[in-house]
Amino acid sequence: MTKLWLNNQLLDQQQATISIEDRGFQFGDGIYEVIKVYEGVLFTAKEHIDRFYRCADDLRIVIPYTKDVMHKMLYELVEENLIDTGHIYMQITRGVAPRTHFFPNEGTEATFVAYTQTAGRPLVNLQEGVKTIFREDIRWLRCDIKSLNLLGAVLAKQDAHELGCYEAILHRGETITEGASSNVFGIKDGVLYTHPVNNLILNGITRIVLMACCEEMGIPVVEVPMTKEQALAMDELFLTSTTSEVTPIIQVDEQLIAEGTPGAWTRKLQQAFEQKITATISV
Ligand code: PLP
View 1 (cartoon, rainbow, N blue to C red):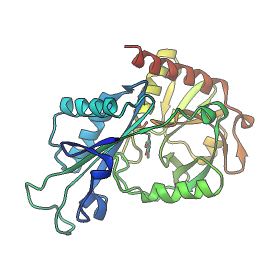
View 2: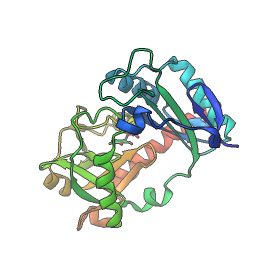
View 3: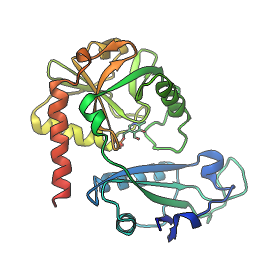
View 4: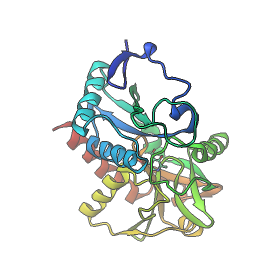
């Protein structure tokens, strides 16, 4: 039986139920994380857990476990479910209370859920690259919080899906922010460009690892917003996320990038990222 955490109970997945008055269900009043598991080892667990607590704090949601306990709970789940390669999805909401927009009474406990999924690595996309589209970024102005409210991303991603594309690259006016569920990077003349960390993007954990790779490899990084035009003029484009890793972008709308094949810099960064994974699982 596959198990999940519902608050502090490890339950069979079929047994778990959530109230219709849960604020996550009614308001999207909560946050989430996705952590990749490689060969039974959680990749960048500390960074994901730190971000989970930081986002909860920003929304004044109290997580009733220490970070250490959370870490142990996640490992227990992975071991219990015999996950080799896959991921953990976890979320916490402001809890169950009669529906009012303002926060419920003090003492209302948050609802925590974590479950696992077996999922291989996206090997075809990593090898061949993906097609993308541009879409206006209609999300709220706290994209630095990994909120359960994902409608802006859902609508953009659906457009991409209907057009046979993997991702929507979001832009506010002419300025690119990030992907609907990824961070976006460009490379021009050996320099890496990406949006700076502020309220308009989620500072991806994969982004952080990638930037560390750049530093180790001596690749200059410029954190500056790119316009759509500048992005299309890049030598290479790629995106990063926990599940997508470092995925080459070979097309945006009708325009091919790097003649429609993954570029040499992207390949080097993929290799560097691969080494980070290897280093984690061989500890
Ligand atoms: N930006 C957005 C909007 C995302 O939803 C995600 C991941 O889901 C990312 C960036 C990448 O973040 P991470 O590398 O931590 O998965």
